[in-house]
Image 1: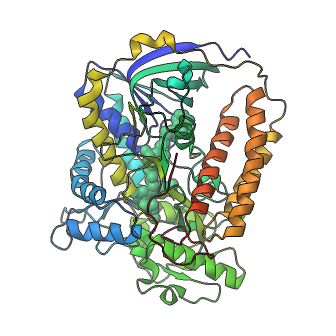
Image 2: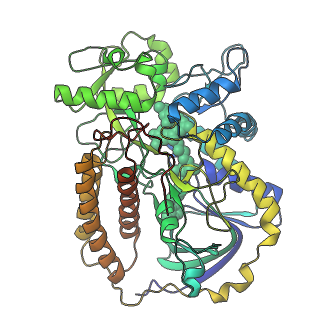
Image 3: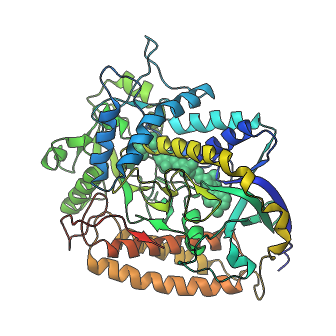
Length: 543
Ligand code: FAD
Ligand code: SIN
């Protein structure tokens, strides 16, 4: 295939991903190390990220009159259902405030009261109002501020439409690398540059993985098309450690629109924070039957309650009732939601909003320590692809933007210490070309698109909000078949983003199913009707 002409590029620091984690890290390192060059890769447009779609906001203790670090720590631990690392929770909550202030200094604007203090929202599981937000488009505002700051840094090269295929390790130098190999090292990545359709080799002293989530493995998700778990799959292939990946968070209230599945519009939890009430098909406010915190119980509880109500009533959605809310306040706080609902004929002052749960966030991922180190040397991970220990079995709402910034900062601080101790870029000739022997152009896309449909169906029907042993076993058998067929296709076909994403999603789904089968209990987001109570099982680490 003619796309296997190898181009070599060297960079001091490589960043995979242009969401909040990647951009924060890149900006900080670029400013602190003006003589080093930093390359950011992103597989589509730079702002097409989960970050851009964040609505509710970023949690942080900024009003010490009513709130405290201790309260935010406790709320996070309660939501995490016994699996959070308490040291990590404490450091994220305490350091998070400085990170939020940095974001404000880079130009991000958060809504303020007339008095000049920040307007603080509330979401499920929070005991106080502590969520800073920019109307209902907080992520878009953060992404804007970060990308504008990035543009001012001459030593950052941001490359769009550059699909990372694999992490380069000793394996590519011809050494046997297994899960018990000590000191696996990252030397950079192979990428498919979509602008040239060429495979490139990018060699880096230090790499940060900030490749985001994996919501696309489910049929209905709030995540955009880029969220295919590529980073987790690459680390797994490179024999790095993955942890707690069975904890997939379903957001209770994605907008239900007939025929819309792949990327559902979110109705932020902040709407319930401002008084929105969930009602079933009979108009009953059902949440009080499930939890004393009612509509503002943690997400796992609310999503399961909705799932149950839908099953009892045989419906595909429940309703979010906002008719009693102050309509001017609603339009001011949620202009984006107001407009979207209007565009499909739902006037929130007169009609209830049809909503259903959708895959939203991956709590587990690439295992990292307190300095954002992965188990692979010179490879950091931050943001949604990482498993830091903050979220445990269920993430507290609006804690992920905070976590991404805290760990991007920690990776940055560690980079300052290590950048002069790693120098692989002189030895790039040792790394072989991408091996494309025996591959040809794909003959028919149906082999990829049909497998993708099957994958999403099996993950949604067998590995969703409520699981059991038989469903997981069926899912496991089907994923093995999809894996076998797709590996076969991959060995003989020229690489393309569609094929690589399918392959990565199969790997991530395999890991979710395997971890779900290993967890013989129900905890947080993992609910198995064959093991309905909690056991003393701790983290699930799969190689
Ligand atoms: P992302 O922002 O997803 O960025 C991932 C990047 O990696 C992209 O640039 C992508 O192109 C790149 N990438 C991936 N694979 C490859 C590859 N193979 N090659 C090259 N590049 C690649 N959290 C909150 O705290 N508060 C909220 O209010 C909130 N609201 C949300 C609303 C929605 C609708 C969604 C979907 C999520 C929300 N979240 C919220 C979660 C939060 O937005 C994400 O967890 C967070 O933004 C993830 O940031 P990230 O930097 O890790 O990844
Ligand atoms: C929301 O706005 O409801 C999403 C918040 C989050 O996922 O943290």
